Image 1 (cartoon, one colour):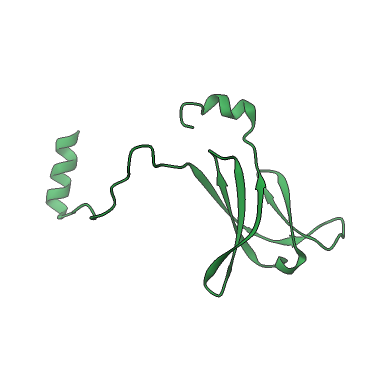
Image 2 (image 1 turned 180 degrees about the horizontal axis):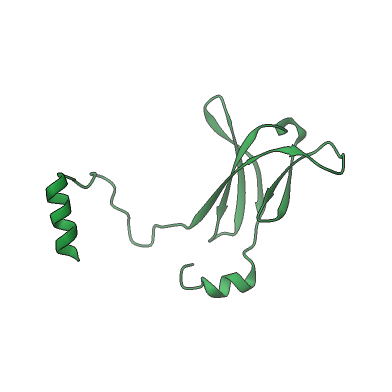
Length: 110
């Protein structure tokens, strides 16, 4: 199969980008979510997003805006970011555990 890849690279003129070597063990599995913040149904005035059927509460100032959720699977932490003035701003950081039944199936990966 390697000969096919090399032939394809030669045919298309593809060159591997310089400086993109990934060190072994440097990969951190993460999952990203884009969510629009909505008002809480209970009328508390808080903002809320839904990630994997879990409600994450945010300040009401973010209602109607979009946020980026970053789930670090190694640390089992969820980071919620908002872009302000073209720079990411951390809105919230919280523990976000992997379901134990799921973790057994992906234990080789993590």
